[in-house]
Length: 482
Ligand SMILES: CC(=O)N[C@H]1[C@@H](OP(=O)(O)OP(=O)(O)OC[C@H]2O[C@@H](n3ccc(=O)[nH]c3=O)[C@H](O)[C@@H]2O)O[C@H](CO)[C@@H](O)[C@@H]1O[C@H](C)C(=O)N[C@@H](C)C(=O)N[C@H](CCC(=O)O)C(=O)O
Ligand SMILES: Nc1ncnc2c1ncn2[C@@H]1O[C@H](COP(=O)(O)OP(=O)(O)OP(=O)(O)O)[C@@H](O)[C@H]1O
Ligand SMILES: N[C@H](CCC[C@H](N)C(=O)O)C(=O)O
Ligand SMILES: [Mg+2]
Image 1 (tube, rainbow, N blue to C red):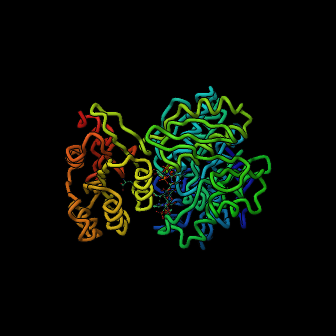
Image 2 (image 1 turned 90 degrees about the horizontal axis):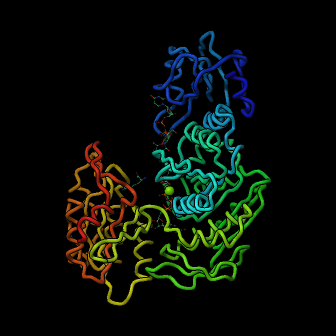
Image 3 (image 1 turned 45 degrees about the vertical axis):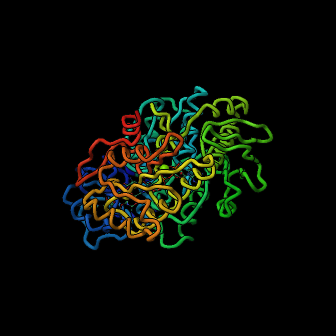
């Protein structure tokens, strides 16, 4: 491929050398370079990629894309100065793979919560409606029935475009992808031709990365700023940041809501362990998903399918058969017929959400037993908070291990326990071994009670000192509750 073909959408500040030359792969990691490649030097959160320009030069790359041109340059290499190397990477990745997003209908979903659930519902719905469908999500990437491991919620620009190319070549008609705020901010989705953008909600999160809440909102809004006029922009009108997303957005605007006014109004009629009954545009429909928040996710799936002009009756019929995303409020059927729930809640906010949801729908006298841990090598401030919330909103709590990684799991438990008030301590046990913790929860739970196992969701491993040991909360529940 010629370098100039990759630069069609890239605004270069300065070009030194020829762009009329053949190039190999695009790389942003110097450790993956081969002679003839293009090296894109990005300023990262840990190091400045410009530091690796000498390595790239020694490797014999064809071109270097950077924000700051090196003072001394090597003959035979083309140097391109751009304002944002990450944005250039996004745009060049689209061109390198032949703009696969233009060959299918692509919808991006952003928001603090509900992205995985929403794209999974959309993927399952469109598969059931017999469309060739792809999905890029936290849990897994899919091209129809083929599963490809996901390393990020939203991969890097090369991964995204490579997967979209595979989809387009396989005849995929629709692709639903999560767009994390990190990915949007790092231009991993730059240049993608979206047919729709969805905003679920926004709450305080990831403020370790985005400096302020305003920056975080702004990152989400970038998805909407990127939408072309032919696309739709669908936002949750019950979230007060919904209208912000639509400001100066060229796409067609649509809203959905359960409380306020919107283009697609809905109302929860009933909400229990059996599922949700929702009045959708005046029509009552029963769904198998649990928890009021899922009414929003279901509405997104319904509206997106309607905007693609799929008959509403077909959509509602198929949607009512779906069960949601793996490890998200997943009811685990077991021989004892106890209510056992696995949920990915691994932040104080998410844990509070899921526990309050259970409180809302439980019957009088049903006790709640929560098994929860906190990951090692991750934000330590959430540890005491999560233990406190678990104790506040449950009848009994068992603190246990959740991916201790390089840390001592006992220390993590101690740090969690520091968040407990004296009056809470009596109802909290500490059992390091997660399987034993689940076994104990089962012993403490009477037949009618509810067991929540939080934090790992869809994960199938326990990471200890760099080694991932197979561990699946759902499997363990099925094994123990007999
Ligand atoms: C904080 C963050 O988002 N980091 C991402 C970022 O890396 P970085 O900015 O830290 O990179 P860096 O280490 O500073 O290096 C800067 C540049 O130098 C290059 N480099 C580095 C070393 C070297 O020897 N040679 C070299 O060329 C790097 O490849 C990079 O291009 O760019 C990398 C390439 O795209 C990502 O893999 C990496 O994701 C890390 C692994 C990560 O954990 N990201 C998480 C926070 C994330 O993105 N999460 C969101 C979901 C969040 C959520 O909703 O929960 C996601 O979409 O998954
Ligand atoms: N629409 C929603 N509003 C509020 N909370 C939700 C919503 N949907 C799901 N949740 C809660 O948030 C948790 C995460 O849901 P989900 O995995 O769908 O979100 P996500 O945006 O993909 O999150 P992540 O950024 O961790 O990948 C769920 O376990 C559930 O408790
Ligand atoms: N994407 C998150 C998931 C955390 C899940 C939890 N099980 C843990 O290991 O802390 C992270 O890697 O921080
Ligand atoms: Mg997700």
